[in-house]
Each structure stands twice: as C-alpha cells, then as structure tokens.
Length: 131
Image 1: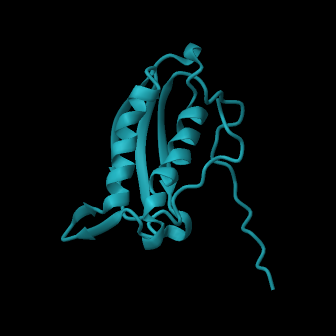
Image 2: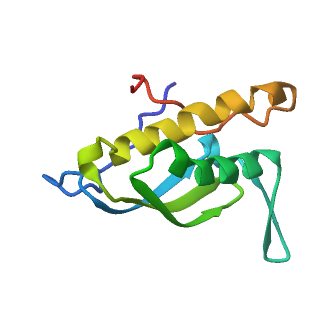
C-alpha cells in the first residue's frame, strides 16, 4: 500500500519577489539523504570525488553568472549549504536560474562514475530546461 506524502508547508514569504537583488541561503539535499559527498572523520569533513565536484562547480558558478557573488558554503556528507548574492537582478540572473542550473549539470559530470553509483541520489535537474 502506498504511503501518503507528507503535507509540506512552503517557507517562502508570500508575495516576495525571489528574483530581487539580495543574499539567499540555499540547501541542496541528496535523495534519501545518502552520504554521497564524503564523510566526517574526527570532526573533519573528508570530501570524496562527488563532494569535490560539488565544491568545484559551486566555485565556477561565478563565471557562469557574472552578476552573482558567492559567499560562505559547506559541503556535508548528504547535503550542501551556500549563500549566493544576486548583485544585479536586471541582468536576468535570478535565484531560480542559478539554483536550478547548479544541480542540473552536476550529475552529467558524474555519469562516468555510474558503475560506482556515486551519481545516484544527487539533486535532480529541473523538469523544465532554462535558457
């Protein structure tokens, strides 16, 4: 028997324009919270290949979106946190575009690791492709 999905409440502010300039805290979580990005050993995060890929692609976002600034970030075994600043909303760089593009091309880069299963459970690409 299928279990009903939980009724999730949106934490977004009603009426707020999330394409506006400003700082945004983002979190990406692996499917089923699988520890795909590494492990913590004696209080130190040890990134595996997938975790290093997440870190590298985060740092490269600035070259893809010149009107953003990247602030603090952390890669954890099963999730990622980062702060991105949209500095010029007129340039059509919105939080939605940055965030939806970030996970959409990470699994593609990891497909060569399909035999190890590293790419399974990474954040899924958006249903609709963005320009």
